[in-house]
Amino acid sequence: MPRVLIVGGGGREHAIIRALLRSAQTPELICAPGNAGIAADAEVVAIAADDVAGLVELARQREVDLVVAGPEAPLVAGLADALLEAGIPCFGPLRDAARLEGSKAYSKEVMVAAGVPTAAYAEVRTVEDGLAAITSYPTVIKADGLAAGKGVVIAADQSEARAALEAFLVERVHGGDLVVVEEFLEGDELSLLAVCDGERAIPLAPARDFKRIGDGDSGPNTGGMGAFSPVAGFDLDQAKRFAAEIHEPVLRELARRGTPFCGVLYAGLMIGPDGYKVLEFNVRFGDPETQAVLPRLRSDLYELMLAATRPGGLAGVELEWDSRASVAVVLASAGYPESSSSGDLISGLDTLPEGVEAIHAGTAFDDQGGVVTAGGRVLALAALGDRIGDARRAAYAGVESVQFDGRQYRNDIAAVAAQEEN
Figure 1 (cartoon, rainbow, N blue to C red):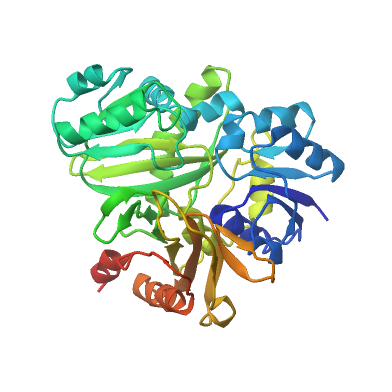
Figure 2: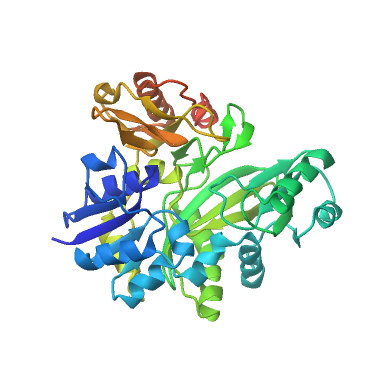
């Protein structure tokens, strides 16, 4: 029986674990640090996701066959490099390749070199240079480094632009001193994740997520408040075309630089009247897209990820998908995204409607063994259905079942998609 270590403790990692439980290889699953929901599906070990040395030692001691890196921070910190040195396969890129997410400026540089369409941009280090680089409003202002999904501001005017630039460059709320100022793109967003072995990119089913906290895309950006899959107009054949035009040129460019990419390469796309442009790359499974995509995967995730760690391992791979639709709705804690409330008791997890699953993110146990909030995004209620509307109704029935003080959620996840299919 193979043994797998999953690094992380959020909804993405719980969704990965649920998919691994369906593997014909019946792997033994260990998760560090995990959460209250993951504890029911895998062995949980209290090692932080950014403790690279502790994670490598755990993998050594437990003789794991594969490490799956969930969040981006340990990859940017060199987790895959340390595991490679220890002779342990890691599904996730080496530090230099992980710069695709660790630095917005580096990501832009690679896109341009690879010939991948993206928004016009400028790199700036002062507020005045940033304001001078803006040619029209709205405009997009991005902190260069990791910011947990909160380092992007869409500024409607000069006042908002100045405030964002001061926050990023003067107050350094995300710790960096470099900002990318980008042209604002209009259209429909699409998330396309692809499993990569350094040469090939095998796309997963396309998904669409909802980044802002409020209905109608109002309020500040978050890590993501929900997602659905499939997306009308973007079937698996289109996904393969995108992977050939976007992911694989980037893989070739990274290989040319001596930093081959193994793992999931996530492309956030904006589809406009004149075609598509890449908004960003992430170097891991998306969150919450994973909670909507992996429930539809019928291929063996363990075998897929293990194959990706071997050169040429994905040659000839064709993925099988459930034809049903999937919708995931995130419940967030009071104060999110500016802050988060912890310790609020969660009820209703044991009385979910049939067919609805709770994918845990920011949850923990209290002294009495109850499940409580322990982060901004607390959990996602996910469901499959013959159509988007069916999956959506089921997911929101799950939302109504789960209660905790101050919970926040959007009422419009997949609403437009459900209307359009009618």
